[in-house]
Image (cartoon, rainbow, N blue to C red; front, side, top):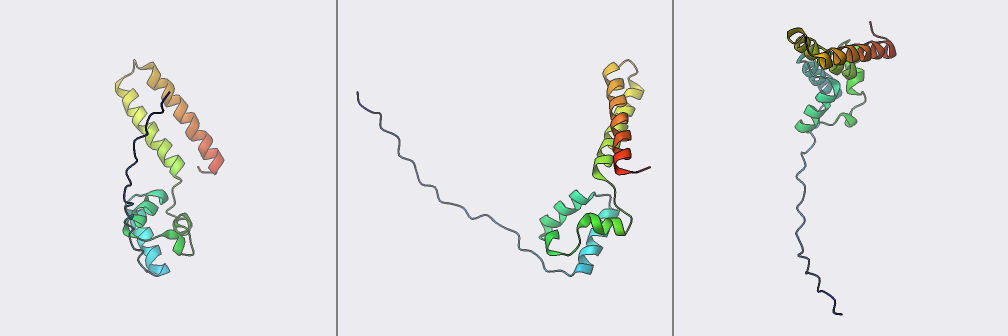
Length: 124
């Protein structure tokens, strides 16, 4: 038996990844920018994403984003915020669709999950 010839692999040129150059800003400017983004309603994760797109990395600074927000009392736990938003959507759906048994069960399930998260994070 003869062996099949393998097709020759074409060499592809490696493209260099385009990286955003990091901007040099002071700690105070970084904190002001974080607080400004928090006032717009962004969570700490979304603030980090937005800053990275601008070329500012939180690792270059002394404090974490969530720590800055906690000091200014603007920190909202993202787990709680997401569950509360989901619960509100289900409540509005169930309000207009009383016959939807699955929505009722989901509403109860998310309410229970929210209660457990509040106990875990010691939030009232």
